[in-house]
Amino acid sequence: MHYVVYRAFCLLTPLAIGIASTQCPYPCWSEIAAEKFTYESFQPAPQPLASPPYIFAFPYPSQPNGAYSESCNAQENPDVDLYRYGPQTQSWTGPLTGPIYRNPAYLEVSPLLTGAKGIAVQLSYEGKIDHPTAIRSSIPYSSTRNAVIVPAPSSDSRTT
Amino acid sequence: MKGLASDNNIYFYYELNANCQPKGKCRVHGTSDALLDQRVNVPIPMPTRPNSQGGSDWLYEAYLIDRGTKWHIRVVDPHKHKDVAAPIDHTIQDFFLPIAKDYSEHGATGYVTGTATRDGVLEESSNPPVMNIVKIYSAK
Image (spheres, each protein chain N blue to C red):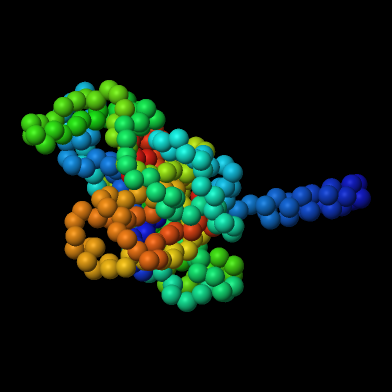
């Protein structure tokens, strides 16, 4: 009988240790592999390559103009109606039903995630605007590069 | 996370009703109630020295603590996984608190996106600003 208990203990102890060692305390980080991302652009264009070790390098080559895009639809979020302001008539029209304007931007989009409580990005910056003081004082101008968790359904929140 | 050219900071931000400016663009379905775009930017100084392997890349983390009432924000050496500076505990503003508490309890459902955007003309630069992403993580 003692032998049986001892054998069971010997078998269970490594198992318990194994389970304990595989538990990941909060925050438990999981890498989102580069190949999991989907490349999106409202204009047909090949996906730009980044030099390893970088998986993405923003900004991608120039995409000077935005466009109305079917992939950015006013009815994407059923809880939200979108309206358009007409400067000449100084009035709003809507709710819109078709494509909406998308700013010039390429996107890298992950698969749908669940249970996320944090985000981490390993990155570096390089370069600069030559005359930042002058640029900042000249509105409108902003230059941003971001990685962000956006909720689902995403409405037009991916059209930064 | 967001970067702004030339100011030596990376910004962690959280936002409600993103891209809903100007007011009136987004409204509650079936009503004329405008949804207000609200955002908080938390500046995080970017380390100016090289990391432990001589690179200029760092790991920037933000995750919920204290039952979703705060963001814990760290800058970490990506190779030694040690904090570069004192972490920031940012108390979440009221407009986002219900969402953060829900995320803390159940986790968020959504996508991670990487993008670069600009408004207006891109100024000429002899050394154009670039953000190089090495890896992206999510936390449970």
